[in-house]
Image 1 (spheres, rainbow, N blue to C red):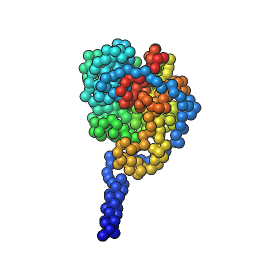
Image 2: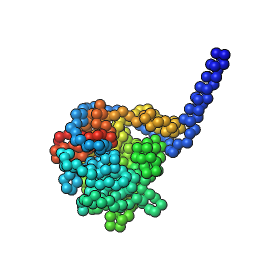
Image 3: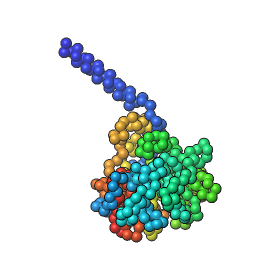
Image 4: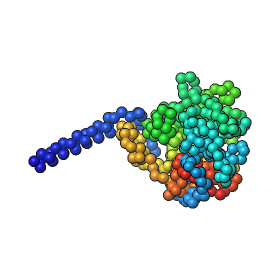
Length: 371
């Protein structure tokens, strides 16, 4: 009797094991990963040697809001913040007089201001928006052509001559279709099909053109001082590009004129790029690289297995605060880190004359340092 019970239990265990293996190997997933070559992670060395300059941030409470993904000073001198809730909140630079400026019904990840004082916002769910000083929202563009929708508007910069440059992080995985910004970004980065692109909106003709494509999750964007070049973060490949602003649909994967890698093999995932003072461009790394994830670059089947696991089990790296400033040649000018990651997922930095505000995916306050 006892032997039959043991055999029965073993049989059930084998069936369950076969079911788990079958699920991990065969269950359909939304992404179709491709092989790519990841350089060995450099770690925190040289200009990025470990430090604690970002530790002990002062903070501004933001009530029930969280995740100040993007921060900028508006033409009215107030601080504007794009929150995870979808609210756009504005306040005095010291954090007082907070109010909801606008709600788009989507998720704004980046914004800038045009010469008329309007906020020009990249909404991951809606596309490129204009928001007037009263908070009224207007759709500028949600597609390049009738058959080519903007899938994942992410970051934006307005040139002095009026052109609006913005990133479409993943036309392949639109957050509105694939379960939100986080799920869409996970699918895109694990797939590595590199469909991200840089777009330009002409406010006179009200048309959109493709500046460059072939980026693995095109993210932060900044404009050179002379307005002729764009600096673009490529999150999925740990690098920052310099791209001609007047380029016409160039494929960055082919190299050549018009697009060059400015920073390569960074120690973390680059997110927002923000112009600072005295020629600085601030870059945020929202998480450090995970060697386990990089080791799967050449194994698309195993990355497909990962996509069948709960998202909490993905090798996304530990919490580690990190922002740094570069000049337009790519030289590191400042590097601020918090190895304890007390202020989570640092997406970028906004510099004023007396403060450095730190952006974050999930923080429940706005962190800042005196300058």
